[in-house]
Image 1 (spheres, helix red, strand yellow):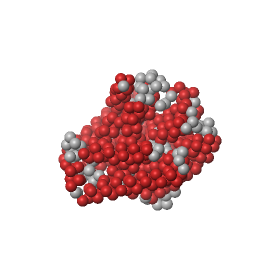
Image 2 (cartoon, rainbow, N blue to C red):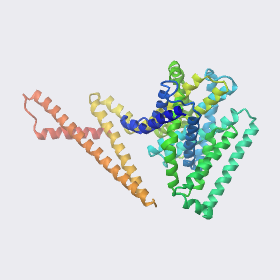
Image 3 (tube, helix red, strand yellow):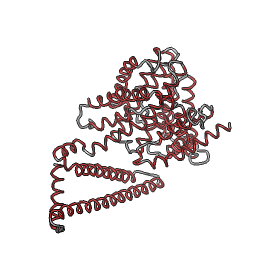
Image 4 (cartoon, rainbow, N blue to C red):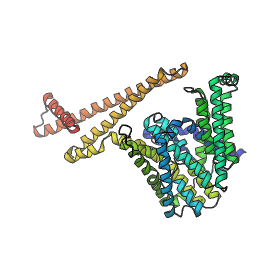
Length: 519
């Protein structure tokens, strides 16, 4: 027990310092999730051996963290999105990726053996780490946007379909028994959602009691939510289903029960989940990575990530490109952005490889490499997804064309395009601030409204500081250019300095050339 508490102390310390470490990284390109996983790999049993992840207590807390992660993911999903047009396309794309994955599994037999190994390998290529993605999408302001909804539509089926396929195809039970259990879980969820929604709509005595105790020491709404989660997760565990399925189901039920625009319970659950359990889950997941095994098989690590991109991302890009409505069709870089985000994979890779190792059709060393590859995608794919915006905003093709016509002006051209990207970044910041301002009037809770107003003020101050910094840089650049012009002029005019009129003419000509090159 002492060792468990020491491990827990180290895990909570890692969780506490991770946001600070992420803040120190330039442009904060590394998500906190990646840092947590990396810390688990370093301090886990395969490296420094300071965290004893095989403790039953830590395993239970890790499972609860996974459950809360997918509870929140299920709650964020709008059923209209996943059963709508994009959702149907998302499911169809998942079926295609699974078929391609089976083909690729045939040519990569070293990953897992036998028929079950073939299926497990194919499923590894089809998953989307939606639970892991949701915090990243929220941090980047994508939730509620067209791109965010598309990511959720495709990503949900990448998560749910894989879990159901695991239950049906990797289970020792007969298919009809598994189907009956899944049907029973569906009926329970429908009954709970209908019962809870009806109670909220009627506002009866039970609802009034729960509501009256929601902000007291009883915290009844939190307790009932946790009860719902534990019941559905226990159902999944009893019938040998992945707990992700039960947690997802609890999130769906919760969405139908909680009144619209009610954020108090969500904040409380977020505090429990992201404050303690979810960081612990990611650290424990990292502990399962054997860095020595990964170093011995770098080819497998790279091959798996490339195969994941080709099998999962490319079909999504093609599916989005088939949209006939030009107004609804995403631009090419947005299609790639959605595909990159949906290729993020980790929690289910841990689950699938765990089943494979337990049933002896995959070695633990291979599993470590695949989990490490999944952890890398948590950083790599969202980074590429965000990078598509930066690259497109800088208009690289236009820059190459300008450099081809005027190779001597390469520095000026590159600076102009980088400045253009920064200007659009400022526009995105302004738009984000406006979105907050528009939403202030719809917030009923005065404390929440004030906190959001303070956030808006903070955003404006950051934008002003950004503009001031850019102004100072522009002044320094102007002084540098002026000094260079004076130096060349003195070289050919016996040390004389050019007059102000001559300098203004050159500056006007430079800006004129900039304008001509953009048209």
